[in-house]
Amino acid sequence: MFTSLDQILDHARKLRTTGYTPKGAWNLAQTCHHVACWMAYPIKGFPTQPWFVRLMLGAMRLSLGKSMLAGILASGKMRPGTPTLPETVAPPDWDVDQAIHQLESAVRAFNSHTGPIHPSPLFGAMDKDTALRLQLIHAGHHFSLLTSAET
Image (cartoon, helix red, strand yellow):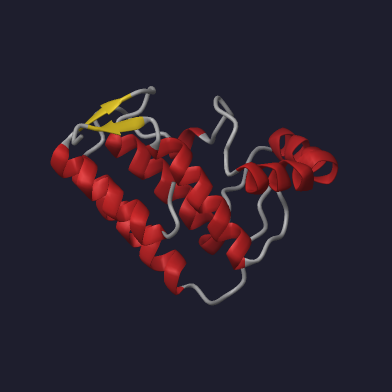
């Protein structure tokens, strides 16, 4: 769906202007907030989870992580219904302009980042190109659940 992070931001702004119909549980503000949070993690670092979650993710990373990542990158799709971190889910009344600004900051930071990419707790180490492809697929998944009112 997206070939650049700037396209994600342009699409969010367009939905803000033209309107949209949600096909899933989240509105535009929640989607922008969620995508922005996950876009920032490879740059700033992933949040520390409780020990039992770290243990589970570590086991998954060592056993399934690389094949899961390869499957997502090959298909260009994320599996619907995958659990996410609660702190990446904004309340329904989250301010859409604030969320779009948050997404804009995350896009700018990711695009300009020249340092190392923090390893994913599930997928492990990856280079920036791989992290970018994953971001584009992730955003495409969530934004596909917001149908533009413009036809």
